[in-house]
Image (cartoon, rainbow, N blue to C red):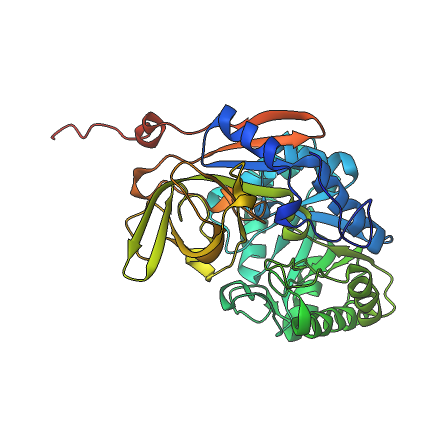
Amino acid sequence: METTRTETSAENPAIRRLDEWDAKRLRELADEHGTPLYVQDLERVRENYARMADAFPDADVRYAAKANTSRAVLRTLVEAGAGIECASAGEVERALAAGCPADRVQYTAVNPPDEDLDYAVTAAAEYPELTITVGARDTIDRLEERGFDGRLCLRVNPGVGAGHHEKVQTGADAKFGVPIDRAPETLADAADRSFDVVGIHAHAGSGISGEALDSHRELVSRMGGLARDAPVDLEFVDVGGGFGVPYRPEEEPLDLVGVARATREALGEVEATLAVEPGRYLVADAGVLLTRVNTVKLAGEERVVGIDAGMTHLARPAMYDAHHEMRSLAPDADDREPVGVTVAGPICESGDTFGSHDLSAPERGDLLAIGNAGAYGYEMASQYNSRPRPATVVVDGGRSALDRRRETLSDVTRLEREVPWL
C-alpha cells in the first residue's frame, strides 16, 4: 500500500501515522469487503521486523503471536526470520501451521489448562526442538507426569514491571513466573529431573516507553545477574518484549536503537544469547480498522457519532481507556470543518465508546479509519451482544486478499445445540 513517508528515514520510518494511509485504497477495500473491516499491511510488518532485527543484530527476535495471529502475518514474519512466542496451545498450532520451524517456536505456559499441556507434550514429541516455558514448579511437575523431558525454559518473576496500563504490567505480578530468588534452585531441580534446561525468561509488560523504560532496564539487569549465577549452562536469556508505539500524534516513536543499546548494557556479559519478544511493535501501525458512520445526533451540547464498530471489534478503549486516532476517509473530508465529537459503537454498554475526537463534520455513511489497530484488535474481538466478528484483509504492495471472512449470524449460533427437554 502506498504511503507518504514523513519521518527521518524515508525507507523505514519508526512509525506510520494514520494520515499516511492511502484513503482511496482504503475506501476501495471497504466498498469491496464491507465494514467493520480490519486491514493489515504486510509490507509494513516486514519493515517493522527489519528495524527490530537491525537494532538487535545478535539477538533472537521472537514475535509475540498474541498481538495478531493472522496466518498471513505469521508467515510474513517467519519468512523474514522471526521465531514465534506462543501463549497457548492454539498459538503453537497456528505457528506450526504457518510454517515456523519448531526450533523457533516457544510456548510460554501461564497456569496452563491440562489440554494445553497435553497438546504441548504431544507436539514436543513430534517436534523435539520446541521449547516449553514454565512459570511454576507445579507446571514442571505436570510436565514430568506427562513424560516430557525436553527443552525447558523457566519464566522468572523479577519483581519489576512496566506497561501502558496496570492490567498489562506482568513483571511484578505474582501470577507470572517463579520469584527470582527461587529461580536458581528451581533451575537446578529441573536439570536434576533430566529436563533439558535451555533458558530463562521474563517480561515486564506491554506498551513500554518513556520513563517506564527504566523499569525495563532494571528487569534486564536482574536477568543478566541471574544468568551469570545460574547453576546450569543457558542457551538464551529471554527478556520479553513490550516495546511501545505512540498512539497519539504528539507522542514520539521509540528510539529502538537506544533501547537495544541500553538492553545490552543492562544485561552485561553473559554466555547465553539474548532473546526479545516484540508483538505490538511489529504489527500495531501496520493495521487499521475501517468503520462507517450510521448515526449523527446532538445530545445537549454533545455531538455523538454512532459507528458500526464497537467494543466487540476493538476492545482496547473500553478495557484499557486506550486512545486510537480516527480519521475521516470521506472524499471531501478536507473541505469540511473539523468538529469535536464523541464516537460510540453499537453495543448496549455505556463503555462502548472510542472517546472524543476532532473529525471533519461527520455525516451518515462516512467511512472512518481507526489507527494502530493491528495489535490486539481482532485478537480481542468477541461475539458479545451476539454480534459477528469482522472480516480482515491483508494488503501487500498492490495486492490484497481476504484473510478472515466476516462472521454471519449463523456463525454466532452454530455451536449451540437443542436441549432435549426444552
